[in-house]
Image (tube, rainbow, N blue to C red):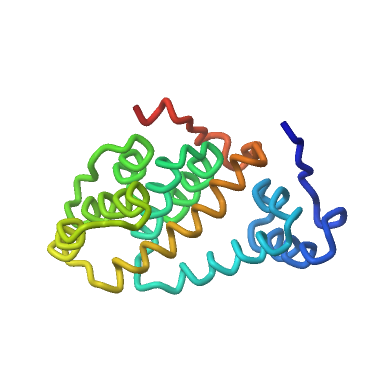
Length: 186
């Protein structure tokens, strides 16, 4: 299989360098995901831009992580699960919610569980959800806007999980304590 290069801010293609410097300033290190995505500056820019857009939704940090981690688990992305577990912990997402997302079991909070189930349905059906799926989301207290904002998070995870599968992205030291693998969710 092809080996991909994981760049730093000095060796990356020119159009990726500024984005990588911004990531280092924001996080204090360059995540391996970005180092690999730098090969395709449009992918790196698209991922970072869509991340910013997703953060402007009406969803709370916990709700955004539910969407992202549900997609990470379903897409089998070891890197993303480790990274988003760490991010969720830093954002004070409740530990039982994080554990549910890592294992694919129901979240105790019924509203958050409805979002997890709906996010899984969007992923599993490639967006072909049915009226029952929408009704369950709405009955839990979410809106039509939420139903569509889940797509933004799902699209974001397509970009990162698919890239990580192709790149075989190594888990960063910052995330290694939260290593996860697909067999952990069974």
